[in-house]
Image (cartoon, rainbow over all chains, first blue to last red):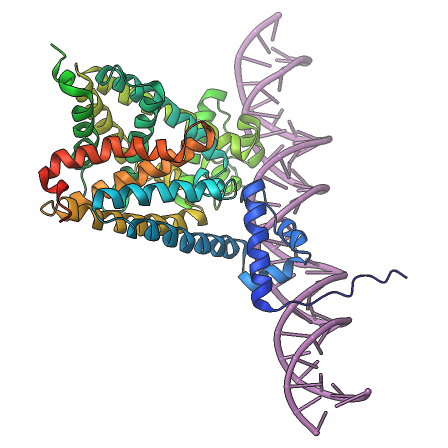
Length: 203
Length: 203
DNA sequence: GGCGGTAACCTACTCGTGGTAACTTCCGGG
DNA sequence: CCCGGAAGTTACCACGAGTAGGTTACCGCC
């Protein structure tokens, strides 16, 4: 009768690493919702209760994945920023490190930010609507910028608005007017400087 | 024997409105995941299969909710923008209308952007980490800005980065360097103009 | 080398929830 | 008056999260 693999046992720390790696892979491929605990277990070569012994719940497993990523991200960005000496260069290098990190971890971490749920897809539609609208506005402001740059700027604005709206939800002392002001501070001041005095037009 | 309510029947269009309203309320209170179809059905005063007859699936129901909101949002922002005559004022009024709309629809729509899943909470932790870091950088750039404004600017940058990263995931022709550049175009140029020549310091 | 004891592991379940099949009842038009 | 069909319901299935309790490999100790 089948000399079936004699069920190797593994130390706790090693198993946790294995499970985390498998979870990141499975969640990245199928999305958190669509992924089942059995899929993760199978990839590790173990059964479901083992996962629960280590992480308590499906949510706990996701949380552990995120915690690990969060530590990596902090490490990467602070290191990059520390290599510069002025605030501008620190912001630039930190930002670049952020993009590079996400790119390297592709596609495992995309699902985190894109929330691969149904709502995610639909939200992208709303964002596209806003981005198109704003890109058209910007074209009026800086007519000779290339289209990709225009779209990039529009992405900046849409992302900023979303984040400001969410922030306003928790920090209740911020008014709509103030949020708008903060956005305009950075964005429009920057555009006016870049686009030249053409801004003052509108006859 | 109980003269139980004689089961009023309702036209298709009316029911759809009722269901959509109930769904928005329930999803807003409990979050999409935690909400069950039976909860929505009960709030309408109907049973589950009715929901399926109208919207096909739980996802379909959520999609319909979002579609309605999307239309409202487009209406509100374009109307606001149309009342201005220059691009700057259009951007300002459109943004303001966006914030005001979300505020008015509170708290029903917060769950959409905050994605009230487990990942949502954990992501907020990462964002807080980034926001603190960036706010500290900005303090060096503009030492005499008030703290709330500083935080607001940091929110703008974090939101912009997130969106740019996601955009890069779909538009594969955008490099990390370009994304960083687009962000710096708007943000740092704006900061330099606002903060005065203090930017050029660094000993 | 043998022998507990503990911790890793598995089998076999429960329960809640998305989704569906098939029957019942109300209502408007001929 | 009555009949066709749309609106609703009850009663079910499938599947995945989570768990109770038995089983087995490894480690230390004699």
